[in-house]
Length: 212
Image 1 (tube, rainbow, N blue to C red):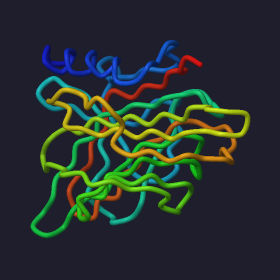
Image 2 (cartoon, helix red, strand yellow):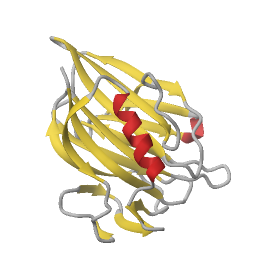
Image 3 (spheres, rainbow, N blue to C red):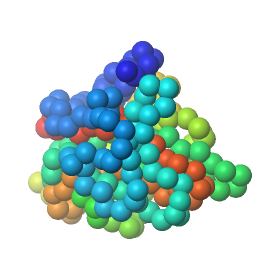
Image 4 (cartoon, rainbow, N blue to C red):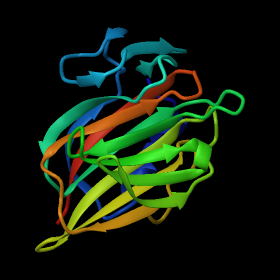
């Protein structure tokens, strides 16, 4: 069972942009038994497992080894889609984690919180195509949304929005990028790079089709 304030915050986020009209996938892990991830998820690399704390269940990535790990979820989509996730991470001294949410498969787009840089980045594959300042807070759940909208015959826009999950959603995207060549269709994804040596947690994963 999610706390009441969390349900309110997540609900408020639905009005962030014109909308996620048609839910395609949703998983809050409340009915998933702790242990190995269900078959509906495709682990690319990493020892992800469903864990539980204080009655709340989530996916946890261990704080070691210090590599980039991720898994895919939801249906395969080309564009006109939005993914969402809550992610929890902590710093350790001067060591900071990096984590993100993706669309269009393992080598598609990624909205990434680079805590050490106080920045949010949009990546196409491994290339950063846009960035914006973001004051990440350690030990607080962070809400991420990534949308890929078709804006013309050969025009698309990436909209990444990031905010502390215990606060109201911002009125506009945190970072955007106008794209002329969309990546191939693929599933949504989440990513964790535990550079701080502490676990990273993932919860409330969703994918929705956007209104045209």
